[in-house]
Length: 108
Image 1 (tube, one colour):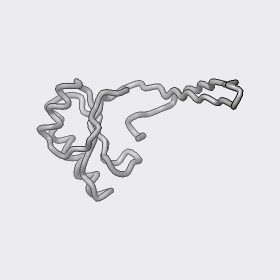
Image 2 (image 1 turned 135 degrees about the horizontal axis):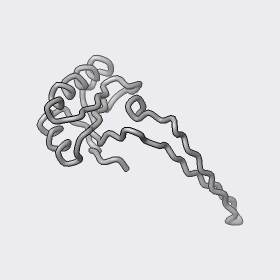
Image 3 (image 1 turned 90 degrees about the vertical axis):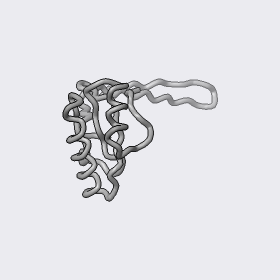
Image 4 (image 1 turned 180 degrees about the vertical axis):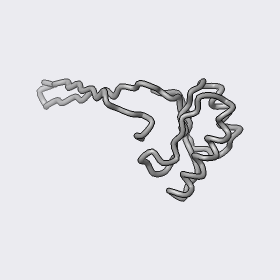
């Protein structure tokens, strides 16, 4: 699990507190929509206010909702899926797949 928040916010001061708690860099993500709109990577506290305001403005313009999620930015993520298939005799198979071409900065 990536450290972050479960509820969307619009308050810059609350975002600062969250960022201090989870550490930089962070990813600001619009709570509505997708496709990379309303997303910003923030490397340090001095850039937080401007990037938060830009993310909120872009999300409001694109989706009509300026609320955002804050999470720890993972620079080289891996997407790993585990699927389990079973039948009534308790015979089961486990399938693992890994997608190493996963870009957290542009996907939600």
